[in-house]
Amino acid sequence: MSGEPPNVGFQGLRVGALESRMATEMERLIVRHGGVPVVAPSMRELPLSNNPQALECGDSLLAGHVDILILLTGVGFRTLLDVVQTRYALEAITGALRNTVLVVRGPKPTLVLKQLGIQPNILVPEPNTWKDTLVALDASYPDGLQGLRIAVQEYGVSNPEFLEGLRERGATVRPVPVYRWTLPEDLAPLKHLLQEVMDGVIPVLLITNAIQVEHLVKVLERDEKINLFRKALHRMMVASIGHLASERLRHYGFPVDLEPSHPKMGILVKEASQAVHTILATKNAPPMRDTPAP
Image (cartoon, rainbow, N blue to C red):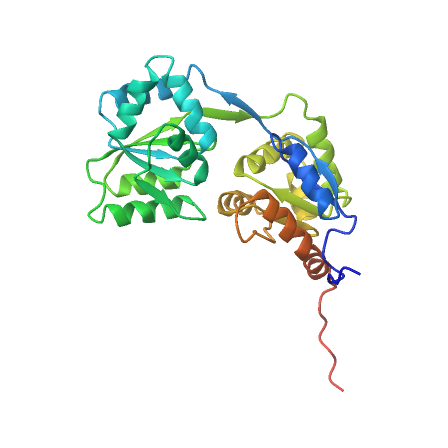
């Protein structure tokens, strides 16, 4: 006997996930923790190789007109470098980056900088939310950001609240979208997964980024099924990888039943498998009735 408590693991439950690039890894993790994976891609990445905003950012960076560059994702930063390299040599770009205050959210853009031989100036601590980024900037600039020119490398969905927070502190803000996301060309697997959720066949849904939420809403609204989907979620467990994804879920009135102790996919799946039976029992328990007085 393993000695594990009886409710550890998914125990054969169907587990839905909207993972695209990491679909195989997600399936493997769900199986490892006793679930039956139902994984459908919800997004397709489109690098903006001819993106004028990224090129304009490169022009400003090389001219010394960017005081602070905020890097939000590793993939986005790599794409920004690729786009700017269509106009400038990497050595010139690296030199300009060294003369700019670099604010980094999370380990992935930090790794890209390390490969260039550059250390970030400000590291945003976990859970790396936009609010954490503002707190980190406030700590480094206690008198505010008045007059500073800030470029924000965006990560697919722009965050107006974050940009406004920078402007409120006096900064001149330039959002720089360097890649965008679109729906998969084949929507059949995604529509099938969403229908299984609405039919009650899938009792667990794992969300690993905010753009997945935007895309499933877009598909549901096209088919006029968003209210059915929202109702179904209140009977099942919705596990979100972290604050950004949770914010988008709540924005649409979707429940968030679990966030992992750290925003990592493996930890999300493990902790969801440990909590699922308790959460489902609680959400599907019959309503309490007042006991009549004797």
